[in-house]
Length: 118
Image (cartoon, rainbow, N blue to C red; front, side, top):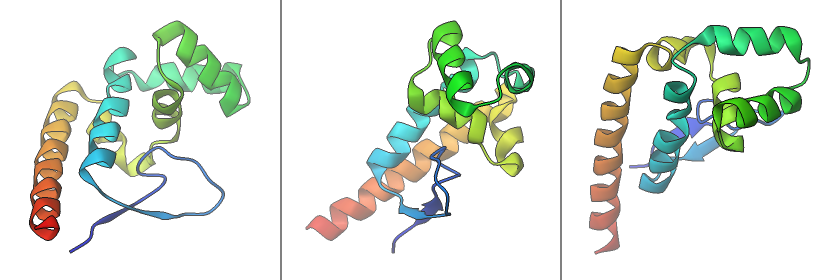
C-alpha cells in the first residue's frame, strides 16, 4: 500500500498539483516544518498582515525568516497551507493532536517500509 499527499498539503509550491508518495522521512520533515505554527504563535493574523504589506511570497518569506526565525520551507508552509487544513495547525490544541496523528502515520509507514524491505 502506498499513500500520497499533494504538494500543496505538504507546503510545497508549484504550478500544477503533484502527488508525493508519503514516506516516514517526508512525514518527519513535515512535522519539523509545521513547528513554524508554534513560532508564529498559532496566529493567522501574522500571515494576513504580511499579505497586506508584501505583495510577493518571496518578500513574505524573507520577513518570516528574519522576524520569526523560520526556514524557507517553514515560511512557505505557513503561507501556502490549504484553507481546509488551517484549523488543524492554527489552533494550539488541534495542532498538538495533528502532530500526534502525523507521528502515528509516520510509525505505520515505517513499519510498512520495514516489512517490505525484508
